[in-house]
Each structure stands twice: as C-alpha cells, then as structure tokens.
Length: 493
Ligand code: URP
Ligand code: ZN
Image (cartoon, rainbow, N blue to C red; front, side):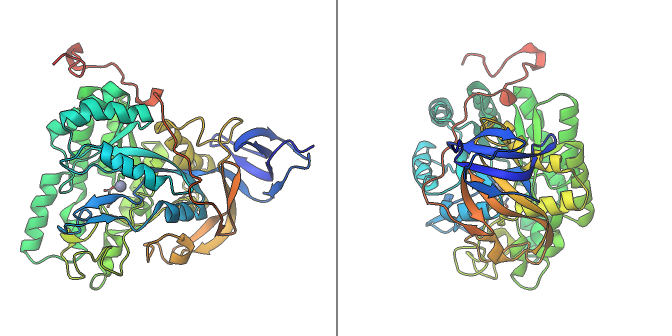
C-alpha cells in the first residue's frame, strides 16, 4: 500500500548541517519520513545524482507593491502605480529558481494608516502560488498606527516592521525610528532597516545635478559606502538603546558589515543581509551609454569587485547570514518602469531596484559553492534555514525535517547555464545578470508536496499560495539590557 503522496527518491539531501543520501516521504504537504529507502509504490520523483535542498526562502522581495505618486526615484506622478511583477508572475519566477516562500512588503502611504493597504495587499498576495509572509513598512508612525494598528497586524501574524532611513518620502527621522523600535519591542516584532543617510544623499544628489552630473552612473556617486556605514551605525545604536532586535537589509560593503560585526561581538541582536548584486554587479555597470546603466540601479548602489571579496568574507564569518534578492523589478522599455520620468531623466528620478527572484539561488550557488567560497551547508543556511529562523517561519519552513512543509529544490550541481531573461520567467523585460555563466541549476521545485516546476516548466494554480502567519518567537525577544537599567520603552506616558 502506498503511504505517501510523493516520494523524492535517491537524492543527496542537504539539511544545512550535513548531507545524507536518503528518500523523502511526503504526505499532506509535509515531510512524513526520511529513510534510506522508501519503496512502497507511492508516486516517485527521481532525484538520483541531484542535491535535494530546502526550497529557497527569499525574505526581501517587492512584489505587486502599490505606490502612490510613483516609486522612489520615479518623479512626482499623481497616479497609483503597481509593480509590474504580480504575485502570479513572481511565483512562476520564484519556482523557476528553486524558491518556494517569500516575505514581501505591505506599503504604508504617508497620511494613511496601515490597515487599508494591508486589506488590498492581502487580496493581491492571495492570487499567487508562492507561500508568503509580510513585512509591514512604516513611513508615517502616528500614534494611531503604532498604538492601535500595529497590535492588530501582529495578531494577524505579521511580525516585522520595515523602516527606511533614506528615500523621499519614505525616510524616518531618528525620533520616528525610535518610536517604531519601541512599538516593535512592545509587540514582539523584528525591525528591518534600510540603512543609508537621507540628508547626506540629498546633499550630494543636489550637488551632482547642479554640476550637470546626471547620468545613471552618478547614482553610485550620490551614495558612497560612508552613507551606508553611518546609517548602519545609527540604526544599531538606537536599537541598542531601545533594546530591540533588528536586521540590517542589503549590506553592500565591508564598512557597514563591520558595524554589524562589532554589534554582534558585543552580544546585540543585530543581523545582516546581503544580496547577489553586491557579489556580482559593480558601479561600473551603471556606466553604460545613455539610459542603459539604469538597468543596474538599486540602493545601496553596487560597488566594486574588491568590495565583493570583502562581502564574501563577511558572509564566511557569519556577520552576514542571509542572502535575499531584494527583487524589485522595473522594465527598461515602456513608461511604467525605469523610464517613468523619461529616458533623459537624471539618476535621481529613475526608480531604484532590480529583479533577482529567480537568479538568487543559482548565482549564490555558483559563485559560492561551485567556486569554493562557501560550503553547501552554508549555502542552505543563507538561503533557507536562516531566513526561516529570523522571520519566525521555522520549523515549518527552511529545513528538511519530519513535520516541516515539503518545500524542496532538486538541484543539479554540475549543470552549466548562461543566464538569460527568458530563464528568469518574470514580468520584467531584462535581467541585470544577462550572460552570467552559472554552475548549478534547479531542475525541479516542490511546494508543500506539489511538483510546481520541472525542467523549467512551471505548473501551479494561481491562488494556491498560503499566507504564513508568524507567532511570537525567540529570535526577536529583547535582551533585557538597558542603559542605566531604565526601561524607557515600558515607562508610562
Ligand atoms: O533599490 C532598491 N533596493 N529598491 C527596492 C527598495 C529598497 O530599497 O529595498
Ligand atoms: Zn528592498
């Protein structure tokens, strides 16, 4: 009699803490058995000669995010714009690249509360095939939002608040950032932070534009690593003062990573994320003729090949323990994407962000594991186990263990592929990684026991993705270490 809905047979199963050749028995969408051999007549997915990895978790993705007045950098249009990447297209792209879960962003529009946007975003996300959770962006931390609305979203299972220390009109002042930290501490949330100094970037941007230096490559000049280092330092210092755990998003350089390393050495609950663009792209990529450099424009800006080596070292040391895509795609053609303010627009008016959902795992595997920079176990931890733990999704997600969701990527570690936009299967008209050669490629993706991708063909019903509610979890518990022993966050008033 068949005991399982599916058996993944004969693969080298990578747990993040060692590998074993075993079969995986799946029942009801979950892993029900790990055994040397399961031969009971259940349907089989052959994995001989392949690695079996936990499905990737991309805990930083911008998908179908509605913006009022255009995206950051896209000028001051009045209309509401929605990312070209829908939850359905993002799901296809994610499955093509071996990713099965994402954490994406519910926007807050200044002058509004957070609940109206959440209601809209829940409906959008429910149309996809990926499993998903949300970070709640806070751009306008009014008393109503912090005291009354945040507890309501926490009750729904949203456990991370995202803040920007730069960007017009999203950035928070120090006072506002402290208020968000306090609210997160009271409600058991993680705070995730975009660390760049708003005033410094504004000052340099105005000076560059006044000097006629407006081409895409000057985006990098507007935000050298010092602005990232300063904001990282400040974000950490204020989080320490409030005694609130934070994750620093998209660390692009050693200077900023060193701030995180120092905080970790002092025992603070501070984590650092980086992305493939900070391991493969450089500021020189933005120095292409005309508008072409816009294809590589994201914030922080891509840096140098020398910096890539330093970021790898920070990954190896564990300072940076999660690699996400920061997928945020804008097409190069048309009037909705990178050219929203025209193809002659100064860099300040070009939307920030690049697509990377499908490319994340192949690039990190190839540049990391295939080139001998990190072990296979380390790769699994960076892309699945660690994001699951930090986001409060473990043990349901991020591991191959009995009881966990059966989310798997069957991986051919020897397959050589040249990245093209068609392979990304996203809604964006380019990939910044076009032509990059990778060794290692996903040949099948399984989401909660369903084979949703095989040999590049994605098959999944829209609407089958599940929301992943997050309860209280240990990683975000404050340390209880307070300046002068005074708990200002809990004081009355
Ligand atoms: O340039 C980027 N990273 N765009 C996405 C929004 C953000 O800053 O995370
Ligand atoms: Zn982002």
